[in-house]
Length: 292
Image (cartoon, rainbow, N blue to C red; front, side, top):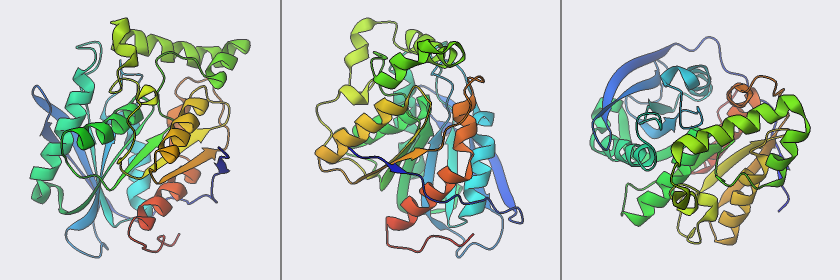
């Protein structure tokens, strides 16, 4: 598959007033901390048509609502037509697979039933995430299909963790450079915590890349990045979705330095990702990309 380079960057608007509200949502086994992001004013309607449910990174073993806060503020300031619900999930340190994915699907079901609390019209729901959170977003698309809901208009996977086997070329290349090897080690440690039972590593709800049933899924935007160990598995998953007839856009973002193992989260905050997401969401109903 030929992967396109990212579009021109879209800068977050600095004059947009945002409102955030911390709430509790229902997970599979109890309440979860969550946060709503929306523009405080200037939106075309009191209830927005698009809801993006977002799951943070952290390799399944760490992370919280602050993990994606900067990115989500930028995302909403770029396009005020949607509301974002960021949710936590059970970390593997508390309970391993499948606790996190069951939480993620439960959050989607909660959002469907609580539209008024979110200021959402109920028209269009998307699921999104970065790194481990992107794994959950991809799996939610599978679960929504398999369990008859909720209906998803799209899935946005940012540098997703999809291969517990750590077998791709971009992952194997990392140990050849000591500071990049640290990022690969973080991924490996995360999977050891999340999937202590080796048999679970081929389960499609743990490793979407291994799934043989990828038809009838929500349209996907998959963002990979140069010099990131997760690049190949993201692009391989995109190729599999396309071969199964799923409308899929795959983009490779410019490289970011990886000496800091959190660089994947920094990359998501870059304007390139914001531009791709704005175009993807707008394209779901033929709308125009919001002006810079």
